[in-house]
Amino acid sequence: MLTLNPLNLPCNDTKKIFIAGPCSAESEEQVMNTALDLAGRGFKIFRAGVWKPRTKPGCFEGHGEPALKWLQCVKQESGMNITIEVATPEHVELALKYGIDTLWIGARTSANPFAMQAIADSLKGVDVPVLVKNPVNPDLDLWIGALERLNMAGITRLGAIHRGFSSYDNKMYRNIPMWQIPMELRRRLNDLPIICDPSHIGGRRDLVAPLCQQAMDLGFDGLIVESHCEPDKAWSDAKQQITPEVLEYIIGLLVVRDSAITTEGIATLRKQIDEIDNEIMSMLSKRMRVCREIGSYKRANNMTVLQTARYTEILDKRGAQGVLCGMDANFVKTVYEAIHEESVRQQIEIINK
Image (cartoon, rainbow, N blue to C red):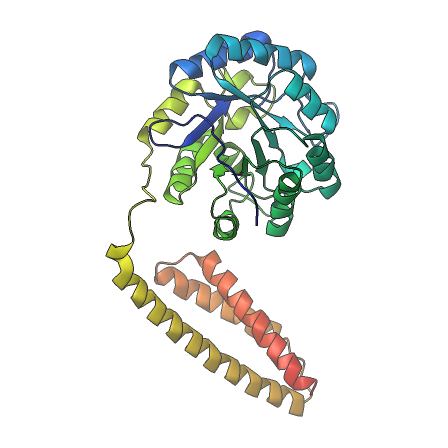
C-alpha cells in the first residue's frame, strides 16, 4: 500500500483536474500565447514538453533549460501551475531550480526500474506532486512498482496518468486504452488519483472528445490534453493537438458523473448480476467437465490436444453470436480465448496422468 497525501492541484468547479498545453515548448511566444489563451478560458495547470523522448534520433527533442525560463515567465504572466515531464535526475534538478510545480514521468521511463529508482533518489526530501504515466506495455505491477519507488523515497503527493498501451496490431488508437488496467489500479489503490491522457490514447483530434467523456464516465479524476495555439504547425504530435478554443468547447460539453452518490438504487440489479455470475460459473464448470472427458478420449486414442480447425470454428461461431446479442466480437473472442486456454490446460493434465 502507498502512503498518500492529496495532490492539492487546482481543480475546476467539478472538482476535476484539467491539465492543458502543447506537446512541446517550441518558442517563448508559442508557450505564452497558448498559456494566456488557456488561462483566459479557466484552465489552471499548463503542460509543455521541455525534454522530448523521441523514437528516432534527428527529431525535435525539446529545448531543455531555455524552455524552463519561458515557463517561468508563463507562470508569472498567467498565474497557472506548470507541469513538465522529467526522465533523469538532471531533469529533476533543473525543474526544481526553475520552480516547476508538478512533475510527470513518461511511459518509457516508468517502464524502466533503474530510471525510476534514479529519479526517486533525486526526489528524496522534496515535497512536489508527481504523476506517473503507465508503462508502454500493459504491465500493472510495473506501473505500481514505479509509484512505489517514488513513495519509498518520501513522495506522498502521487497520481497516475493513463495514456494507453502500445500494440503492433493497433488500428483505431495510437495507444490502446485497455480501460480494465487503470480500473484495476483504482481497485488496488483506491485513494490514488488517476488522470486520463486522451491525446496519446487517440493520436487524433477527432478522438479527443469521446475519450474525454469515456474517462469521465469511468470516474477518472481529471484529464491532461495537448493544446496548441496553432496545432497544424506543431513541431511534434500535430495530429492529436487541439486549440484552446476547441478544448474549452469539449470540456464544456462533458457530463461529469457523481461518484459520491450512494449505490442503494442499483442494489437489486447488482444482486441479479451476482445470481447470473453464479450461473455462469456453474455452466463453465460443466463445460470444463466435458473438456476433461474429451481429454480422456484424446488420451485413449493418442490424439493431440490442440485441434486448430475446431478452435477456429468456435471463435468464428461465438463471435457472430455475440454480435447478434449486442456484444463486441472482439470481446467474445477474448472470452473464448481464455476459456479455450483453460480447456487445453485441463486436457493436458488428463493426457499426462
